Amino acid sequence: MRRLVVALGAIVVLALPAASMPATRITVYAASSLTGVFPRIDKAPRYSFAGSDMLAAQIAQGAPADVFASASPKQTELLYHDGVLRKPVVFATNKLIVIVPSSNPAHINSVYDLRRNGVKVIIGTPSVPVGAYTRQILDSLGITQAVMSNVVDQEPDVKGIVAKIALGEGDAGFVYKTDAKPAGTADPGLGATANSLRDRRRPQELAPCGRAGLHQAGDLAPRTSAARGGGLRPPEAPAMKHAFTVTAVAAATLALAFLVVPVLALFLRIPPGDLIHALGTSAAQDALIVSIKTSAIAHAAVLLIGTPAAYAIGRGRFRGRALLLSLIELPLVLPPAVAGIALLVTFGRLGLLGGTLNALGIDIGFTQAAVILAVAFVESPLYLRAAIASFEGVDGTLLDAARTLRARPFRVFARVALPLAAGGLGAASALALARGLGEFGATLLFAGSLQGVTQTLPLAVYAQFELNLDTALAIGAEFVFFGAALLLALKLIPGWTRSISLWTFRSASSPST
Image 1 (cartoon, rainbow, N blue to C red):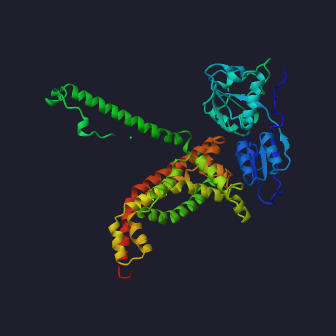
Image 2 (spheres, rainbow, N blue to C red):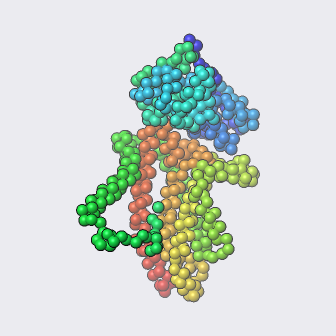
Image 3 (tube, rainbow, N blue to C red):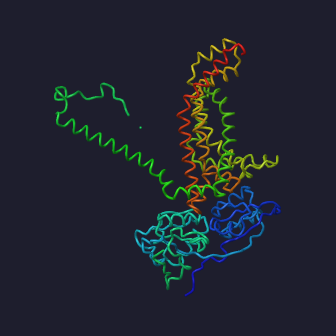
């Protein structure tokens, strides 16, 4: 019987930017379905793998791509007509298949089995090629409504589908044939992959292997005479006390287990040797370097600008102060993705300030400068609000005493206010740093995920989750160790800040000053 290849001829398209190709290392933006392919062909280029629609949006905003390999001609044709790319060229084709977990718990043996009640199906979102092709196939078979009612998740790229099926989060998923079992890798937990989907006259067989309120006195009901006479009966009091104790202990145990077990799972999933080995991969090392570099620069800028700003706001009393504080807090309640879009439409090539910056020869979007701005944007409100509170807590009489001694404003700030607020500032700094290192959404949308350039540790976890789970776990373990070190530092902050304050006051009162 003929194979169903509806709209699957030429699903991968190569397009070159209109600008001339550089003589140095090129940058390739490629569909996630090519994650296990391109690096095997050539390891020299810089690769950024994601859904074709996301990559196309980044390129349209000025992402520095030399080559764009899309999983569908739709995105490249649109960019071509906008004058962003050269004419697209088809260089490969693929086929759509259905994959199941290796244990095949739902006993999926045909695409028509996906119509059964209770079957958990994972597909791509409508905007990505694999999702669009899946819907075309289901329409051609006349089973769209039945199968879509069983869809439990829609992923933004094909690698996410593969990862979810391999982890047993779904019973079946639609992916490209080349994604089911990447060449040169171990079995990812998938069952035997199907051949191309066949038509309705011959369903494809899938191998089965494969927060406490306070009451005022008048609010409380008067005690009964029995209660005044001696309270509860003696036999009941111990039993109720014991029951409450057991309940409280059980609740504490459950809460502790809920918080600790997932963290321990990071280390128990794979042997320690493999975990250490995974930290040596180029993806983990590149992401670590990018994260340290960008976070250090962003955090230094936040401390340098945010500390005097927090002092001015914390010690000042002026009209509109409450509104100003609300504006500082606003980014804290914004989703990271919204922050990323806001930065993109402000500093991107087509953004509010993009034209001016471009005229000055400054490109920010999809560079390390974009990562620094994204990190600073999400961590600065956290630091500013806590720093303002710290300066508000400083005893004003001490600052007034320094001024009566003719100390200049900067000296009052640096030699009196700053040491007194050091404890709160240190805690605020540590928490802001942690928030910046863990930033994901704003960075992804504003800077992209280019390995060695803009791919930070959180972005590397996301990328490696779909490619190499061991590496993703190793990077996650790095965050656990960093978090433990950060908590230890926070515990030590009160001690060392007292030492700093004592040293500062002794220095300020010495004859040499």
